[in-house]
Image (tube, helix red, strand yellow):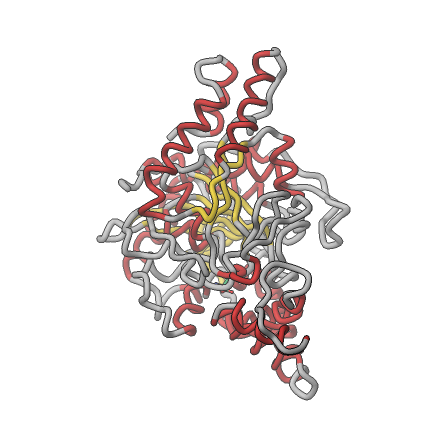
Length: 485
Ligand code: GLN
């Protein structure tokens, strides 16, 4: 599959048109979608129209940017004006946003071609894309397995070549974990680097939008296009955005200049032995490239999961209060009065996992429990942040597995929410601390399922993450493997 840079070259040299590139993606979608179901809706007409506009620019001798004419998938919790945005929930079944998210607005301005909206766990709550109200997405490497989640559709679509890159959102691991399960690159940026305007809120203090790509360079190119201050998002940071692709070098020399800290708490019990082995081989490879490897401790890392499952549902319970059958989407009929309409709408419009979170969050925030649960969880969050800060006093980048295992079978964890929550053990602390984290392919297990290496950076040091990930990727072959769908 061609990279952004290769496609750009072909366009500029007029070897291929944007319409041809778009049509190829649409054809691929038509071929594999019956097996994968990465997309909730395919926007073929609009995509071809956008492609024609790019071709017209090229024909007129105008300069085009790197993303012009590049097929991209957008997670269906990102608002697209005039195109349904369902969050994979019944409650937003027919919701057509009257406005455009900042990220998709930026991408459209850059000439990127949106081919469709991708499947996800309902309201991004889940780790397998199985809580979607509109059916499962299959893992392109093994159709009986999940693609991870919640951005499973975005990850599967890129892995299977249905689009060149895609956008997902990551509240507790929803970009990095599916990237790991599908063998692609996924990055969750520093909290506040990318505007959340138009991203349907799950847990506002944790949510971030970020790219999926088949290479580090493509991911860096996409992040470049969507990062930056946005007056429409009050948590958006006012910081200069570095040139991410400029830092991409094939090695990490001079030797010893870059220190990588391996988080020791992420190894041991609960970690699949083949994942552990692949991570150790990857770390040795990083050492060969010039990095200095240290073992570091984040003793409170393991409290990330319990504190996240107080904080995220609390915020979700407040954010999801707006779906009452009046303002958006679905409304239950045959109600006798207003209260009954509200309750019926929410009872039938939301799926089980979403209702579980709303109840957990409402409970944790209620008078008498607030201090014991919510406040305590926020204190733990501060301690986890301090663990990272302490670790970063000695090293530049942290490393650990992205997920404790490779992709599991569909249905394997649906009856046991706690086992599903555990798949985000290693990604959640990064969201709690607001740090950037990337997952890069680092091998396959005996069943041929991809394994991901997670690299965690200091705040706003995405450039460093890209640098390390790129040097690693270029010295390996993992990113060149494509699943046979
Ligand atoms: N799997 C985690 C959850 O269910 C994280 C989801 C996410 O990052 N959106 O909350």
